[in-house]
Length: 489
Image (cartoon, rainbow, N blue to C red):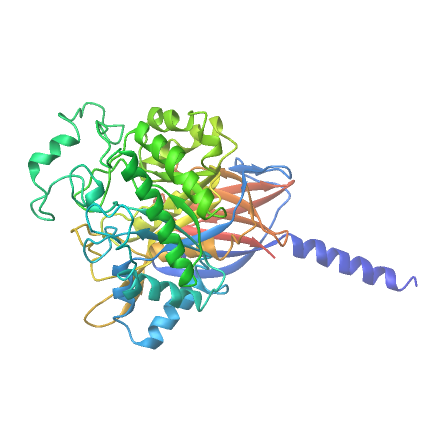
């Protein structure tokens, strides 16, 4: 028996040493996904960047997600079948790179549809007799089915960009006229507001609409709520269960592509009196979230959320673009809601390393401020990523329409650093924003009881970083303009 003691001690020492080891994955523009290992240390020679306590807790993370768009389906179908399957596996398989378990798609056309359409463009069809999802069956549903072949457990949520045009005060799919991209009469732009107050550049939009672009007559409002319900039912018949809805994508983007402007009163009225009651009756398992919020005008969103009926109407709040700026303040005032990120920012078609750094920072911000889900916008586009209305945007994967070459962009790898190391059920424990010093840090604790530390260095020089984890130190020198993941082994 005595001879076994040294063996036991040796094994215990080995276990302790093993618990202190982290796998380090680093990516720079010149060297993607380089892996090595590093040990925790007892002390640090530099000021601690972040301290992690055993009881630290921000949120339990649930899902990474992507959006299904017609333009993305077109890009995928430019490729031979073998390349298509590789991409689908990387995006949706549980052991893939991005591991999406959540999907978003739009009810009616969005700006990455090929052109404008809705599910019922028959004016005055209050019975929705002519409602159909025939257009969706040509692209969106096949795209979703292809994804489901790699992950049958995908969950889905929806929001419209624009209602049917006949339900709007300008009788048109867009909000504002643009001679290059639509045929809306410029005279109707007065419906939005008279003059733009551009003195305060810190708020978006500079001036909010004076009118709801959705007709506020009860008959129209109820028909639109029924429209949501019929859409959910139609997708159920296709084997696609929609679990959550948001009433409008970017109600504060006054766009030349599909959109709809709403006032705070209109938002409250539609959600409280029509949408939520209709879905509770027809689809009681479908949740209603407020979103997607893309304005940093705190007063407007606070006006909506402070309505005493809202807690019984919505279960959560979704943010994107400028809306992310007011997320911390709103979550502090309204801690009982669920919070989600709804659309990762798409840039302007640069497809460069800086776009990857921007996305890495965004994920740090949203998870660090309590969002339990994160949805990416275009996972795949072709050529310069132009929308149906002329906006050039980034995507995670880029297809050359002539050569059929596939490029995994810097953003793809920025995302992969998170998605391969932060699975559903991970506890986001603490974070440091990188918006000032360009060194974002996020610490999570995974369901298999492992720490993960994600660090970006977006400065022009190598940086020393020290993270204190329950009494020990992760001391590292991270390269300039790098993404880094440290996973406990």
